[in-house]
Image 1 (cartoon, rainbow, N blue to C red):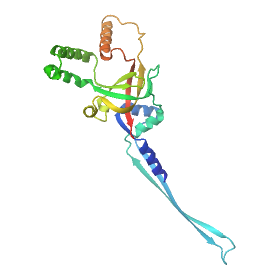
Image 2: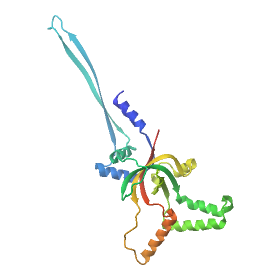
Image 3: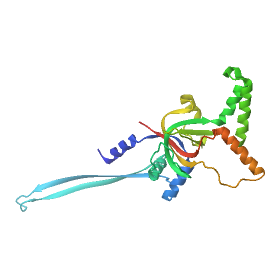
Image 4: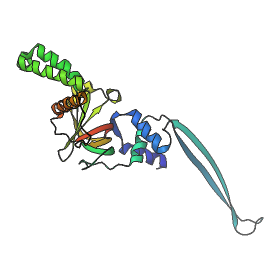
Length: 258
């Protein structure tokens, strides 16, 4: 087996299925680490063919013989589509060990998390609530309750832009959440929900920037700013019930294929 076949076999064993990639951050990090982003990939293959002839001595020659070699060499250069080569290069350069538990302390820390993944598109939740409120009996919900939930959601969405959320549950049960940008999803969220609901099967690898939420030591604001801080904190508690101590900015989500 030649080197090309061996490399192809190794690559086939390590195929990954990418669900989400933040192209801007991926290119930015590669450019910072390698003094430039990957724009093209070139491969060179060199091959050689040789033959030898052993001519024995005769009356015209002294005893013994001589060896004559003939060889030919050629080089083939191909330029491939860069596609996700940047992802593989970034994974190699970062060289992060996947972890199934969160670090005790993290501030702007790039981590490779491994756990269960759930996706929820809160931006479409308002339309669902409107449908439920218009006909609550069909969904076995009291009309008053449906209207209260709808009003509460409208209030929260004006303060916090609820978009596409990724929720990662680690092996120790700790949960971390992050907001995704729909334009960086490689599979449409609606297609995922129609197949799997909100919880995706299997174990997923998530690479992103992790921050542990700590009490702020910033001097309290005054006047209108103080009121805004209080309202924002109240809305945040409605969103996560105060039980989430980590914030994650994912830039790559994938799973290994078997």
